[in-house]
Image (cartoon, rainbow, N blue to C red; front, side, top):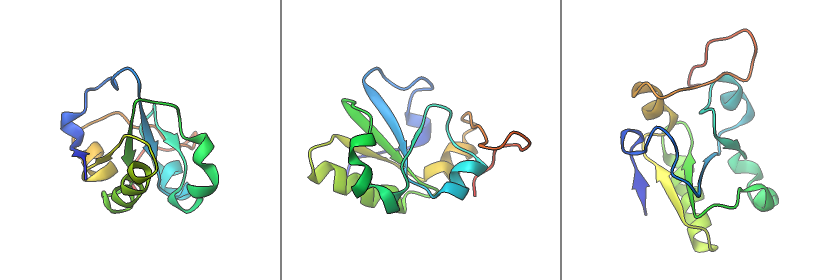
Length: 110
């Protein structure tokens, strides 16, 4: 399965690509990448039309397990998807930007 570590992904996503966050709502609210699109794994099949049209979709969860499953599913169904290894844990550990879904909190990985 194709994968990339957070430190290998350019600070600015490459043109024609999108970042898909498949974590649950509470995880998303705690902290997420600013440019990410949120579709929880549990809603993915019903929301396939909400996946951004992109040449390549980077898929992220907390640690890489759920995103690996989603990546495999998307690739089997016609998308060019890449798993973000180590997920948001790796993203945060590498000092990548994060925003919170709440107005009063510092972003963190839940």
